[in-house]
Length: 618
Image (cartoon, rainbow, N blue to C red):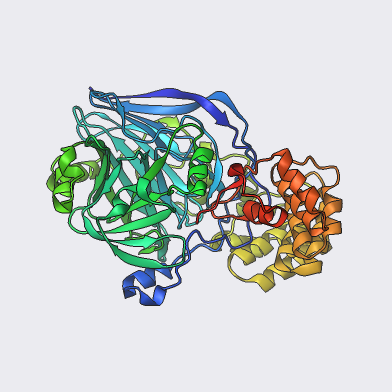
């Protein structure tokens, strides 16, 4: 019998901390840059050039976490039958945290023993493990550490279905994820639907990222004889499968392999004894990928950083496009849906790990549900896709309700109730009623909504320092930088405020930017993200004395410690810079691909880079 119930997940957890109130205006560093686009097939090259985000606005960064963990309970929902038990975290992007095969007692996923955010997502905070549902743009979704709506509905076979849904704000798209575990099934079914309620095309990116343990004998299999390899070198190259790449523990460096799938799409990670996890889907979810950290010092350090003491892991992934470097066009008024299945593998180890690649794949594929069975389940789910949830298990944010207030939408199955509207939406509800935002210039302003509709409303709102500020952020997000600068100057003229000054600093460079930052800090000296940016700007402008003055009195910890070392180095105090390293520190939000720790160390010491500072990806 299938049951669905609330539960709690108790584990050492870091607090997510406050959002960074400073809008992310700098174009995010691309996770992957393809240098050989001209050599690629035309459709692949076109999709790579289409739809990239220049900013995560209107979403702010989530960089207020630390490395301090205390045991606490995370809200969870469990769905189980006599074969499987799935545990889902609705407050953290709907992450499928655990999938246990009850007859064998095996955990099929990589289950992180802690909740520890790290800087790998579009908004910074991300955590490893389980299955993550990624909608938005290349990279980990803006919703990965955000709550989702959750409710129980009746499945097509009478068993309970767990429905999750939310409004993805960078693309303004509603989506739903339905978990269905038919009685007696050894496969968790996950139905996904993404809808475009707008009168224009929207770039769409979806990847289901599945973390599984990586052991010495783990082999990754997919129905492919070739894969696109990206190794953080800038090139995307077609390579043959199989080979060493199917055994991730043999790889030295981090890499992505996007399989050129033929036939029905699936991917599996299988251990030396023939057991493991397989993921398969209906045809729309065509892409399959292997991500591995590699066995370099940096790769091992990243895994320990993300999941202390848990051992290594890899990711098998499934997406709408053939690679994660692409975005597809979702036409106006249309929706895409598909069905995924997650379940155990129990195959002949001699076949799975043999030299015959065809036989190895067949040993896994024979135990998977047929394409016909998947299509039947998919058709059955479509009959309940529009059922309106009545009893909520969890509540998401109020942004979908706000958009529905602005322009009512018909989105059966995924209601965004007015009860979800909160303090974050209040200024924008007032704007809809004709009241412009206003307030204390030294108080943190509300986050700016930047889509074309809200930008137009703000453009015609009465002028004050805050409406000028918001106009500038919206102009910047739309690529109109000169208009943004003019608006922020008007904001400062109307009432001097650190927010517009800081944005003007980003829009300029050199000594002028450094001066604007110093001026902003005098107005908001206790705002740590602003101070961190200001110190970095002084160093970039070649002003170490000014950087040192800003550092005066600050605790030498985290990123401030790194900036202290860089400032002392710029002042010619090499011994003082090395002393910062010798005293020990951790930068909680060190970015994937960031080399500031190793670069600074190389400038202060000829000794090997200490292991705790080695986050090099190549």
